[in-house]
Length: 258
Image 1 (tube, rainbow, N blue to C red):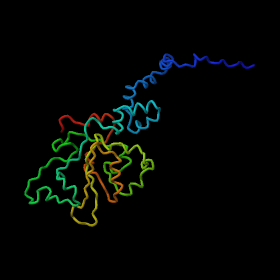
Image 2 (image 1 turned 135 degrees about the horizontal axis):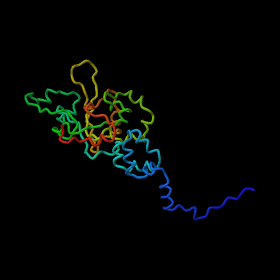
Image 3 (image 1 turned 180 degrees about the horizontal axis):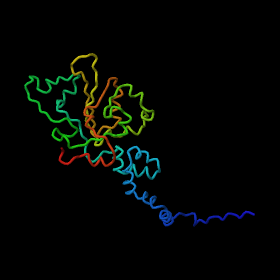
Image 4 (image 1 turned 90 degrees about the horizontal axis):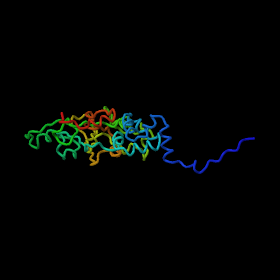
């Protein structure tokens, strides 16, 4: 005859803090370490960006830890680093009227209407003032750069780019939309569009200045790009650095500039 199962008492069904602590203490040391938020953050910060993004699927506790950590959110390019946004600065484009013209008359722009004024030259760079060249390192979002060629080191945008995007990247609620394209974020950059229709020697470019106080995320850029049929590129993209991990975020601002 089968032995009847013993019913658990109400006292046995209650999980007390003491019992919970006992279970934690009996778990492996590695598991106990991952229960300490500060240690978990330090470990997660060592992950490549894609792995860090996917780590949110491990458990709700990990998801909460990542989404509530300012350092991890910065490593995912969803929160800005402590440095305020930078802009693309080009001495040739300092005249605001230049951005409203389809063709650049560099001679008049640089030397004035009478072409006698001496232009002021400073290095083209990403910064906040004309004299802070070399002060900031701008790191491109590696996940976005793989998806969107316009952000790649030698990348351009053209209308066919949309056809090559995976369906997940085009989803209305896609997570990439709120990711900054760089760290630190850029709040002003110049997009150039090749609109030449013949072999004319004139500089036939349309310049668009994208400006957002809080910094540009991919949604801001993509909304503008998707209405363009011509080839488009980002001025100064060659000055961005490739992001290799969270340690790069401590190198955004260089002491003393260059």
